[in-house]
Length: 535
Image (cartoon, rainbow, N blue to C red; front, side, top):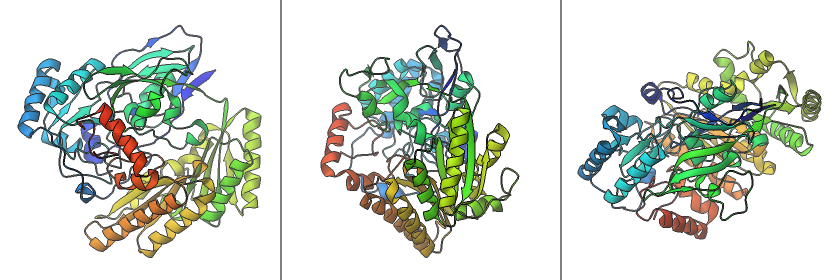
């Protein structure tokens, strides 16, 4: 029997400079402890703590103006922050503090983010343990210095920006797999573990992506979330450092408990605003014995989404169900195609199946029949690894294809929403129409299996009318999602970029409850201030 945590988010680092300077996380520094083996092989696919993971990070607009109305908060001045940094350095070692200007830039600004600000951190602090983080928090509380967790730098909503300056807490050294419990089917990791390194330790797989901590912090998801759920579904427990430096564990290690409040749910998705996650225990999932992949094209987005909904309602066993619109398929062809083929330039569903050999074969037959009922064509299916990889390649290359055709001087604004499945076809169609009216190049890519989709629009940031137009387009899409009882973010999180939308979705009283929770755990508003809610 083979086990893994199935991957959620495929993310970017924050632009070329960030990628060059940070690189991939270093190899696993120490071997994890392993409970007595039962002959089970494990694998994982996708995790990071400290930074925010995002499913599709596109190059987007600097929306510093979005943060200009934040309430005034009083924090230490730069001289005091530098004094505190020296105090931390004396305790943790010379290389624990970094004030290099280029590194500060990459820890406070990302070309992949839709919500950058003008300020930068004063210093980058690099802890190696929970005890280090606790000490950092105690010193920051003493001097009233903001703490901004940083992992892979893959946020598109400004999660690691520093609107009030402060310290960027970089988790790149906390990259150890601490324990693998074969018989219990779980694993204990530090926040800086790259999910691919984790997967490779358990079972080879995957593509480079985010770190565990940010994936917990934003409750991320991705192509496999339809079957396997989002990050919150795999968290067994968390070790969290609170603003004052105290350390808590959210619960013990059994798969189920009715003991007390659900603190896992409180900190998962909190974007580093309630506590700093320093260890995570994650469930492992059984890897199915067989897989299959299929693609099928449709005359319209409406037909594709209706076919997708029908597959779900009729109980087809699906592992992933993705949509790329006609524009996205054309872009893939313009960049040379994938898998040795040119694709139909029509809205296309990309489908994954998993289970027993018979179940996969039956599911493929059912998916083909439903596709035909909805005017689908060019149905292709594969059961062997090379052919499956070739069929899925266009989905994997979607982001890179968009970046390849981006004209010089333009940027791509990308955002996501999620709606009930019954509303998906309408909101995708209307969002595409809105972008088309602007005369700007745009495409849609969606996790249609759970009603979540991303729209990206190319624009020239030096032309105010285009900036205003794309902003209006995005705001309209968000408002429309709320009208349909949807959410302003299916997986990117709130950060700075969508903070102004949150009250519209949840209501002022609910925001008040969140504010009370924040104030109780972080009375001086030191943990990632400016994100999710303001005082």
